[in-house]
Length: 115
Image 1 (cartoon, one colour):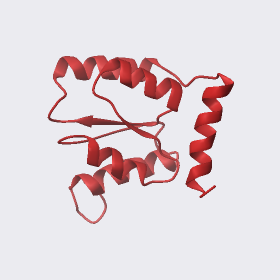
Image 2: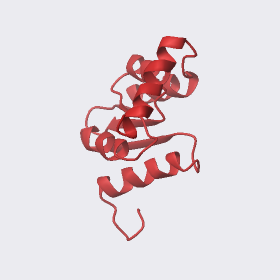
Image 3: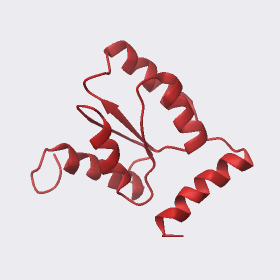
Image 4: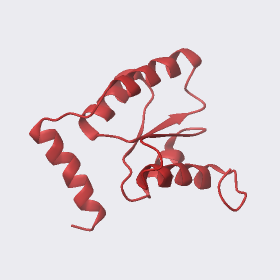
């Protein structure tokens, strides 16, 4: 439950994202029925790069190329088996160190400041 007693997805997901942005958590996992609202709420927090992932390949790509730090999930679409695959991919994959990949992530960070 988020501060103020709200258990709605917008409050809980943004609070989890704040924990990541503030360094209280290395990564976060947020969810709602479709996962879309969870990812939108998390991405409103500066310093967060939330990725809605429906399979392991997307999760691995989000970590590799986007240095995503918040995983957004759909409660409707994600079976136990798919969840296991997504989590395994998410936690076993790190961000790319390739110059072009880092440049893209740096551009995302610049965009937060309005550049």
